[in-house]
Length: 135
Image 1: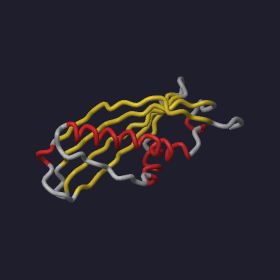
Image 2: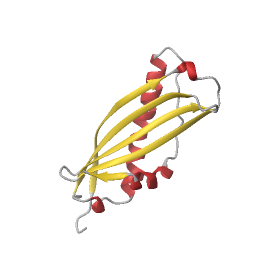
Image 3: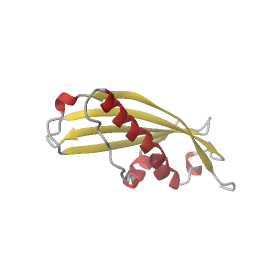
């Protein structure tokens, strides 16, 4: 890799949003993030996909969100060109959008807003790397 690789956060969308407050039966809540990615080599783009779920301690899921963020690369034509710091940073860049959206949608349902705290999601870096595919 002779040139430095740069990336830009291009866009995002929420593909699936399910909220069922009838399942919210306790204050003990577990949140889960399942990241995956697709490198579009022809366009030098990366699709970060995150599936977010929130469930009670009794395993009753009450929020499920599937979201996609698009990043554009400069000087990255193969998956090997992507620097390792990208995976951690891509999640950190997109998380505030996911966090705000979940809060907004739950509040608009005339329920108390479900507020995700600020989280350190650096542990998702390796799962994202391992689940990245090429198209």
